Image (cartoon, rainbow, N blue to C red; front, side):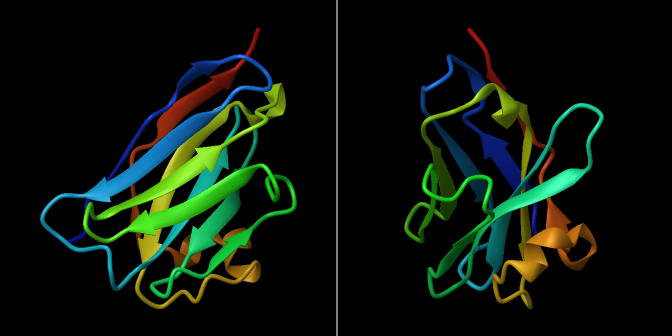
Length: 127
């Protein structure tokens, strides 16, 4: 059983940066494709980025060029570096994992295909 834990959320001003982390204790993430989703108040869960076990990334159009996903096998952690943050980026950010997803843009649109989920970390972008 893979247990994912997100961290790094917080309050940041527009234009600022935050770095989120997704890790699992006791189980390696090496064989999983990892994705980041977010859910703003009153909205559905939106897939924004993923990275497969070959470290190939993909991004939604809403974050491409501003967010960077990476993975560090030694730390058993996947990171999401968020820059040029906007108020509309305010949401709870979740990481998800699945052994069979390839990390395509289409896979970011379907939450049901991702097997494991963390509990989320709040990101608030406000002045």
